[in-house]
Length: 257
Image 1: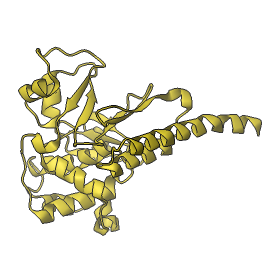
Image 2 (image 1 turned 180 degrees about the horizontal axis):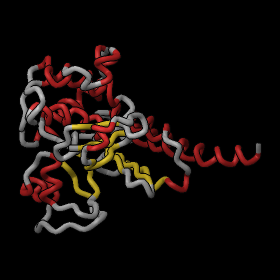
Image 3 (image 1 turned 135 degrees about the vertical axis):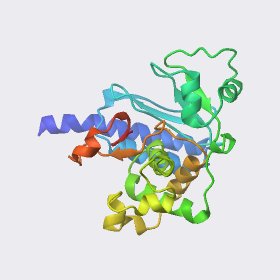
């Protein structure tokens, strides 16, 4: 019993830290869009993380709330004010690859961050301009955006915001990939393509964050870099999906080409 109590203490400390950070966020007036910050807090609190694994939870002067976990390589930056994002440079990143990932030009990222060269260092934090300032690579009718948002909500409701955008990007990538329907509706309703369509979850109303994620994907943000598949590795044994080349993992989903 004593051992069980001692194991619970780190989790209590994590939740207390997150709650205090959220109160600070509200007190400083960072309320747009506050729902994204609350979603990120709920996701973090739901994870079985010991206190010593928590790297940092902070609200900077720029209104960006950032939480990081040691060891797992996970860092989620939440757009609290103005729609901007922070991105931490990792090994193998280049200014070009980051610009491509978020739908901007190298020149745009350099100008936005006041960089004089293309050189980056591991751990450097870049501010990513809002999606509305990104190159518009897709245009969709309102009905398609609604379908995309509902699929994101059904497939990635408990995932971090970046993971939601990534699911939307997969759908859009399929519309341009050989072997898939060339419309959002065609991709979503393709037989056996998405479990949420088969079990009916897709037909439920989507949350505001899912609509925001859908619009971000439509604006050209593809966190996956071109993936056309995603799945939860703990929930599927499908040989075909496991045969695909995995390019990255966001939250509980892995993304593949």
